Structures are given as structure tokens and as C-alpha cells.
Length: 475
Image (cartoon, rainbow, N blue to C red; front, top):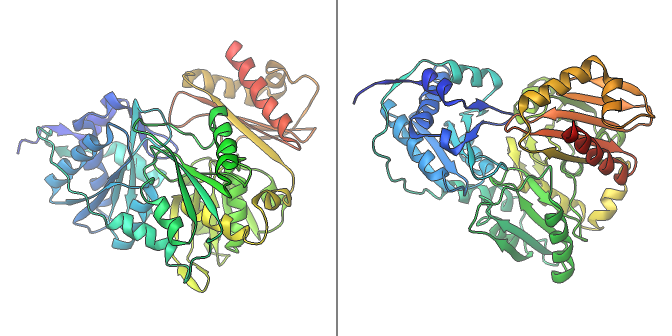
């Protein structure tokens, strides 16, 4: 075996960087040697702290994902490590089986970003890698051989089976016998598992719009087309709920009985209430109804991205018995073991789409989902993004806004309000004197500028985002 490549050099030359959740880039950048470089560097970065002879690997449904997994498996074998290939499964299913077996994992996924892009997400035997681990991977100097032939990978079904059992084992009898659940399958990595979970719990499941083409659904910026689909499906099939996820199945998209999609942070709030969580870690972009509802002992705000939420769990666990987190995009992270129906539910500190939808159904057992939402403090959020917007332009706008926030308001057409509070935890978040919130942030995964808004009525939040992004595009 000829050792002729150095991981740090290959990674640097690739131009691929870590975003809020994993290394992301164009498919053309993820050549076999680049996937190999990341895999070799990952092994080197965690070897000093863990002993392992196997690494779990899984993929999403992107056309490029299988070849990337093959390259990862080929290179880790150079270090006498076996790859256990779990095929197409949701990211939390891979994370869970790896956690239970105490081995590292690599998920090949680009989540919600378009199919011409992809990514790698890494897990240590004790959970998601940290930002420090990311730096260690980028800077590791590891020699490895270029891959001339990609190995065929045999699918192990254990991750899929264990993930289904994680949730069905919580209940001793079917309790959703009167529920009709529509599953918007598209190209989700979990589309072959979800109907098994809900049918085992007694629900009637209607499969909706499976796609052979990859569909880049972003649960944080739902298209108008997908908004109308859920409403129409609810009427056509008399559904109690529509359930979907992003591409790798770690972020849920869930509707009420009328087909209206719930915001991910509202879903997380309701989930945490059912689980009786004491302390929460949530990104700064989440709805302020979380604090206003007064259902939790403590709420800690973090930068956007699951690594930051997870990093806060250790601090919260020192003072509180149950800890969890969630994001505005819906991903739910269970930071401590809890009990549900007198059954143990183990911590899974990575984004998960299934737990929140099951908890929402539990919360709505004697009422409707829309009623649960109406009982919360009425604060409404909306978000959207400008795609193909140069990161440099986004960063320049943020720098100018931090220096002169009032001038930024004028720039985006908000002339009759004053800045009340400035939060620079992540991007620029301005609370205005009319209690409206506007938050600008460059994406960590792609050349996009995201805008979040919050107000007392949805139309105000929606219009704020639309007007702001239109003004910025016109600059």
C-alpha cells in the first residue's frame, strides 16, 4: 500500500469547511481522496481518547452519498478499522446505534441543501463531535493511500431496527388507533421506517409523494408549495397530522389537524412540556414563547447549531435533573435519560425527528394540536433565506449592522422604530421598541443569508422577513 497523501493538505485544497452541522461542500469537491482525508483525520482526532475497531457508516438518498461512503470505508480500513454499513437510515438512527455500541460513526449527508452538494457528519463513541474536534480534524496530519478501487458495502439492518424499537417499546399497547397520519415521504432517509413506527402504535398511515429524485426540503424555510400540499392533504385524507423530515431525517416537519405546519421551536416547546424537561438549551433564534410560557426552570440561549446546544448540556446537568434542547428548524436533542410511561428513554443528544412528533400526539390525545398551539403565548416567527448570496456580502452587512444598527434598520426600510436591544450571539439579532425582533445571519453551510423575525402577529413577522430580504437583494 502506497502512502502518498496527507489529510490536512487534501482537506485544505478541497475548500470544504465545517458549518453548523458537519462538513459541507459541492459534490465535485467530495472526491474519494477528500472523503478519505476526512475519514483518516477523524480517526486520528479521536483515537487518543477512545478505543475502537469499528466505525458505523450510513447515508441519505442523495445520488452521490453511496460512493462517498465507499471512499470513507476504504480509507478507514487502512487503519485496521472495519466499517459497519447501515445503508440509508436517518442520522439519529445511526447516532443511536453507534452510541449503544460505543463506536464512532460517519453520516454521509448534506441534510436539506441541494443535491449538487453533500456533507459528512461525525460522531465520537459518546456523541456528536465538538467544535474543538472539528479543528482537530482539519489540522490532523495523517498519511493515507489514495483509493483506487471502491469496495461494495453490505447493508446491516440493525440501525433501522433499533431506531424503530426505541420508540415502539415505550408503549405496551397501540394508542393511536383512531389517528390518520400522512407521511410526506419525498426522498427522506427515514421514509422506509416511519410508517412502521406509527403503524405499530396503532395509527392508519397514508404515504404521500415519494420521490425518486432528491428533494432538498428545509424545515426552517418551508416553500409555499409544501405549505399548500399539507393543507390539501389534510382535507383530502381527513388527516390528524402530516409528518415529514428534511433529507437525512433529523429535523421534523409536522402539521396540525388542519395541515398548518408548526414552527420547529413551538414543536420543541410542546415536546419538552410532555417530557417534563426542567432545563433547556436552545439557539438564540428560537421563539421567545419558550421563556414566556414559564413551563421550564431554566432556558439557556446559544449560538445556532447543534454542537453549541449540546455543549450547554453538561453545564445544565450540574443543576437540573432533566435536560434537553431543540432548534428553530425542529430537531430535538434529548440531553438526559428520562422516563415515559414508566419506561426508560435514553438520552440521544443529536437532532431527532421522531421523538417530537410522538410527544405531540401524546399532548393532543384529549385535545387538538391547534388548541395546544393557541394556548401558548402568542409570539409568531418566520424565516427565509437568500440563496446564492456570497458569504462575504453577508458578513459585510452584519459588520456594518453591528456598528450602526439604527442605520441598518433604515437600510432595510424600517424607519419608524428604534433598536431596543442588540444580541450578537450569532449574527445580528435586534429587538425593536415595538417588540418585533429581526435577526440576520449568514448560513454556516452554504452561500445563503438567513433572516428570522418575530412579532405578536404572524403577518408582521412574515412581512418583515419578505421586506428585509427584498431590500437586501436590491442593494
